[in-house]
Image (cartoon, rainbow, N blue to C red; front, side, top):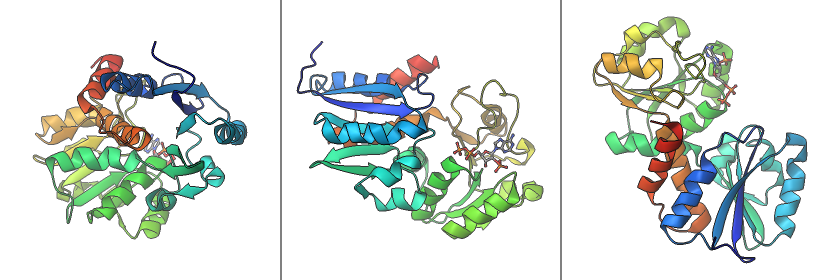
Amino acid sequence: MRLSAKSKFIIIVGDPVSHSLSPAMHNAAYEKLGIDDQFVYLGANVKVVNLKEVVLAMRVMDNFYGLTCTIPHKVEILKYLDWVDEKAKKIGAVNTVVKKNGLLCGYNTDLLGVVIPLEKITYLKGKKVLVLGAGGAARAIVYGLKNKKALVYILNRTLEKAEKLAKEFDVKVLNYKDQKKISDFDIIINATSVGMEPFSNITPIDPSFLRKNQIVFDIVYTPKETKLLKEAKKKKAKVIYGFEMLLYQGVAQFEIYTGKKAPVEVMRKVLEEKLKI
Ligand code: ATR
């Protein structure tokens, strides 16, 4: 144990939080870079009504250095911060808070969790992308893709929600009933929880419309290979697993917290071990 009274701590807060893989992923990365005497990453279950007390603690405790917000705190945290990054402001959610010169600064790294893995295999400018879902995850993804000049469409079970989100971000809507048009898209991203265990035998769209060479990215990471990705593979589409999003939002977060380049492969290994994939 190399920690001391000078070590900085970062806490992930959520409700629930015990399933979070972030502490294992970040602490392994600190160890790899030999900075595990300077940083430690912990987790705490916090009710939404108590979030402001956590922020107060962060203000008065000098080495309470970072805060990660997961569900349901990503929106609530905004009102307690001193400064919020433009992208996070537009998305309306913050997952990363860091103390800089005593000020609490908020960022959103969820969008990078989707953009980075996609950009490893394709460019996004001008690509026709279909985002499935219109909730919080979809907001970050739609914004991230629009920012990269992709042609974004939203398909959602509840049409009004898709229309509202599309209007806000100036993108288009694909009606749930027009699923045959799915084959026109270059990239399809599932931003709903459909397919997550224990309901892993369902897909958010009719997979018979998927086709060869499309890229299909599912943000669900339990199971690793969702039914949607299985069906996409059968059609010879390229698939991106949900844990890539978990990994790269964490990589971006690591770099904000430490100012150092993240050891991506160490972080990937931790996720693979924990998710038994
Ligand atoms: P998050 O913040 O994680 O994105 P959310 O805000 O609850 O979660 O959004 C969940 C998304 O998944 C919504 O787009 C939801 O569709 P509706 O707007 O119609 O509710 C979508 N979703 C959840 N369960 C679904 C299901 N069984 N079939 C289709 N879409 C579903």
